[in-house]
Amino acid sequence: MSKEICIFGAGSIGCYVGGRLLAAGGSVSFIGRERLGRELQEHGLHLTDYLGADLRVPAAGVRFATDVSRPLQADLVLVTVKSSGTEEAARVLDAALEKPTVIVSFQNGVGNADVLRRHLPSHTVLAGMVLFNTVNSGKGHFHQGSQGSLDVEKHAALEPFVGLFERAGLPLHQQAAMRSVQWAKLLLNLNNAINALSDLPLKEQLSQRAYRRCAALAQLEGLRILRAAGIRPAQVTSLPPHWIPRLLGTPDWLFRRLAHKMIAIDPHARSSMWEDLNRGRPTEVDWINGELVRLASSVGQRAPVNERLTELVHEAEKGNRSPWSGEYLLAELAPRHVAS
Image (cartoon, rainbow, N blue to C red; front, side, top):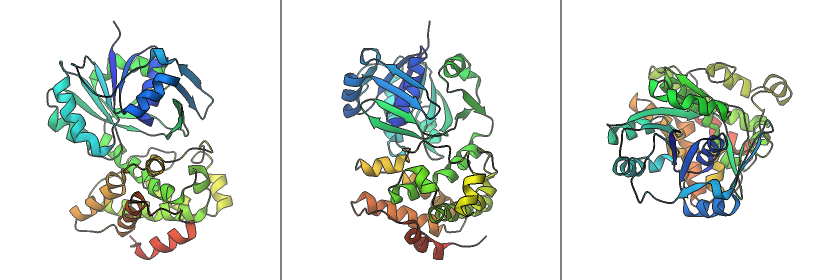
């Protein structure tokens, strides 16, 4: 008998991962917003990636609900809600789940699994990270625009699901030190705010040195704060974390030569933060750049570059949005940088 998988908070990541599992023969249900539910009821799921994968699941094969109106019979729940919705997701799952369940937090930030554990002590809650970019292109089409993996906290309870993820082309990379992986991904995600403010596709933004220097300033500040907190980020790319800011600061011609894997990104890919601003939704900046600001405060320091990026994104959320050029954004951030 196949294991039942529930995607709780089906947005871009949830629909893409859940859709790939469904296309591979998994038994998958989705819980998400009414707007997206109507879209999938009309168009089904269309799943593509930057390597050329092209999969479809007809509308009749997609089980989608907008709430949990009856007990949830799931063996595995993938939580993909925005970080601001984690507390509410935990309360709903606590009331709906009838048996001990494996729950994986595939969310941005570093503390969501801890929130879920507090509310769901009788379940196996694991931290996870999605190390690739996914874009909602509309009409049920979700596209993986960059390379990357699904990383998850190592646990024996995952064993019944490993084969399905393999068949889906999304193998689970089980990590013994997941918190280090989360902080490493957060360092990379500091660029999400810069991408959102630029209003450019990721590849185009990363192809311009001024924007890359902004990202380098945010990452250098992050590395300084992590050292002060005694946290060592994992290596999740081909380069160690402390080398990446140096690479980002190189001239464009040299960056293109050295970082061809880093910019192995679909030309249309954008950050989830850009997508949120574009759709008029609150972003997760408080759980990415803001997470670093809070860590800095906890060790008696400040993170002024990431403070300012957080402020600028919040201003954009209020409708005060016009694209920042790389040069103007760099001029805004550079005076705030504190050398290590």
